[in-house]
Every structure is written in C-alpha cells, then in structure tokens.
Image (cartoon, rainbow, N blue to C red; front, side, top):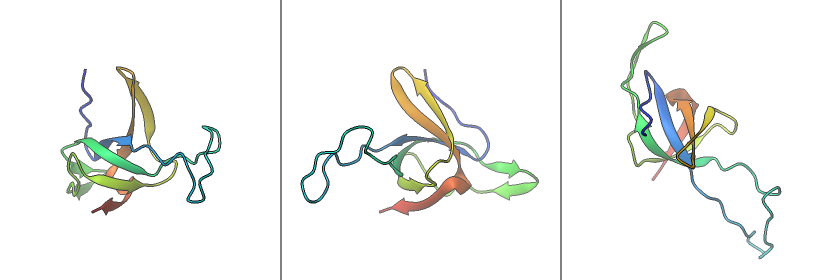
Length: 94
C-alpha cells in the first residue's frame, strides 16, 4: 500500500535521532525528544486550498524540519509516517 496525500499535505517519515548525547550518555526511549527532522516520502498536488493558490515547494527525498507536534501519525505496513500540511514545514535541510 502507498500513501498519496491530497491538496497541500505531505507524507513524512521521521529520521532517527542520536541515542547518545555529546558527552556519551546513552538515552532511553522515554528520555529522547520527538525528532523534528524528517524525510519527505510523498507530496500532494497543491492547488486551491481555503480559497488560496498553494504551490508546493518541497519534493520527495527532501529532508525537512517540522513543527514539533504537527500532523497526524499513521502506521502503514509496520512503518510510522506523519501527514502534515506544507505550512507545518519550517525549513529544508541541505
């Protein structure tokens, strides 16, 4: 199965964070912060959203930083994804 986002929505997959701090302390699962860097898996077509023309500036494969608690989490075929609006994406990581 695949996810095909609609309108100005984007399917992202969070990138795993470091399990150690810079000083070498290993973090448990509960001590880790929710990652904010994600890879874009699929992008909606854009178009007219809420009466405004939306142009999609991101593409599959881009690494992005998202708002901390943005989007809807979805589990598909054992993988976890989030579906966010393009305006919840704060920056593209180059």
